[in-house]
Amino acid sequence: MLNYLILFPLAAGLITLILNRGGVKIFSVLASLIILALNAKFFFDGINGVDFEYKLPFKIANLFEYHVGVDSISLVLMLLSSLMIFLSFLFLKIEKKAIVSCIFFLEFAIMGLFSSLDGLLFYVFWEFSLLPLLYIMGVYGKDYRPGIKFFIYAFAGSILMLLALIYQAYATYKLLNVFTFDLEIWKNNASAFSFNEQLLLFGAFFIAFAIKAPLFPLHTWAPKVYANSPILVSMMLVAFKMAPFGFLHFCLPLFPDASVYFIPLIAALCIVSIIYNALIAYRASNLKELIAYSSISHIGVMVLGIFSLNILGITGAIFYMFAHGLVTGSLFLMAELLYKKYGTLEISHYHSLARKAPLFTIFFALILLASISLPLTISFVGEFLALLGIAKVSLLYAFLAGFVIILGAIYMLAVFRKMFFMQQDTNLESFSLHTREIITLVMVAFLIFSLGLAPKIFLNPLEKNVNSLVELMKTRAINQENINFLNHIKGENNVRFR
Image (cartoon, rainbow, N blue to C red; front, side, top):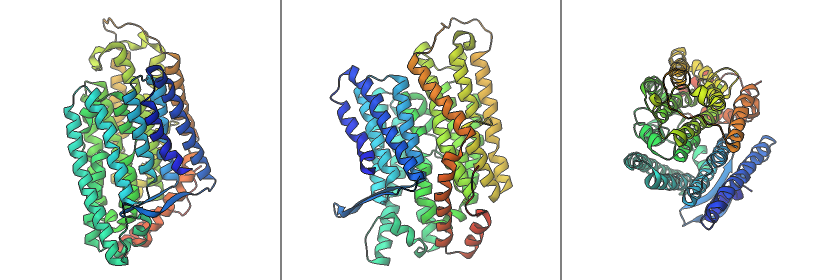
C-alpha cells in the first residue's frame, strides 16, 4: 500500500501528458483528491498502530536498497503536501498540462523522500524534486535568474550531503564489513563515530538542509524565487517541509552529540533569521516578497524548536510545519487571486479593498490572523509549544524567538490596514469569489480553527515517535555531559497533549 501511495502521483503525472486541456483541469483535482484520501487513510491507520514498511530483498544497481517506511512524523508532512496540492488545483483551475504533470512528478518525489529509510534513496528523491521546480521556474517564471541562483545553492548543498552519505556508508563498512546506506543500521551504530566525525558529518547535512529550509545566512535565494516564480512553485516551496524533515531524519538521530554541541550556534542563526527577515518584511513593497520574508522568519522558530531536543519543542515544531505550510500557502493563493484580478502585487496599488471585495477581505483576515498566531488558530498551537520547548533549553532563546509573534503582528496588520482600509482615490474594480475559490477558502478556514481548537489529533500520534527519537539520541550519545543535558531537557516521559 505504501508503494501505491508513492507511485500514484508518478502515474498521474504521466496520464496528464496525454489529456486535453479540459481533461487536465478535472483530472488534476480528482487525482490529487485521491492521493489526499490515501494519505489521510495512512495517517489514521498509523494512529491505530498499523506499521507501514517495505524493503526489496536486493540492492538497486548493486548500490542501494529500496527501503521505505513511515511514522507519524512523515505521515503528517505527507498529508500536508498532498493537501496543499489538492487545494492548489481546486483553487487555481490550471489548464497547462506541463505544469500539472510537473506537480504530480514533484509529489511523487516528496512521497518517496518522506518515506525513505535508505540514505541514498533519500538523496535520489531529494535531487529529483528539483527538476520539476526548475522546469516550471525556467519556462513559466517572470525571471529565470533567481532560478539559477536557487539551483547553484541547492546543488552546492546536495554535493555536501552526498559526500556525507558516502563517508557514512564507508565508515559503516569499516565497522560492520557491510557497505550500506540503510538508515536503521546507521542509527543503531551512531555511537561508533568519534566526536570530530560527528561534527563534520553534522555540518555537511546541516548546511544542505539549511539552504533548502531556508535559514539565515543561506536564505538569499528564496525571496526573489518566491516573488518571480509561478504561484505553484512558491506554494510548494513552503508546503514541502523537506529540510526540517532532514534535520529530524539525519542530524538528530545520527549525530546526537553534535546536535547538542551546535545548539548555541543554531540558536543564534535562528534568532537572527527571525528578527532580520521580519524587519525586511515590514519594509517590503511587493505582497509576495512580504509573504516570503515572513515565511523565512517563521521557519527560524521551527528549526530552533527541532534543536530544543525535547518532546515539547520537537512536537510543536512539527505541528507548526503543518500550520505554516497551510497558512503561508493560502496567503500565496490569496496574493495570486489579487494578481489575476489587478495585474500587480505592489502593496501601494491597493486601497479600500474591504469595499471592493468584502468576502475576499474576510477570508484574507482569517488567514492573516492565523499567520500571526492568534490564539485558537492552528499556528498558535505549534508556535506556543515550540517556544515552550525552547524555553526548556534557554529562557533567553525563547524570549528572543518570541519576537516572531510581535514583529509578525506589526507588519501583517500594517499591510492589512494599507490594502483594505486606507481611504484613497482608487480605480480598483469590485470582484467576487468563484464557487471553487469559496470552497477552497472555507476548507482552509475550517482547518485553521478546527486544528487550533483540537490539535491532539496530530499531537498525540507525534508524541510517541518524538519520544522515541529523543530516547534514541540519549542512548546513542557518547559524551556523558550531553547525555545529562538530554535527560535534563527531556521532561516527563509520554507527555499527553490535551
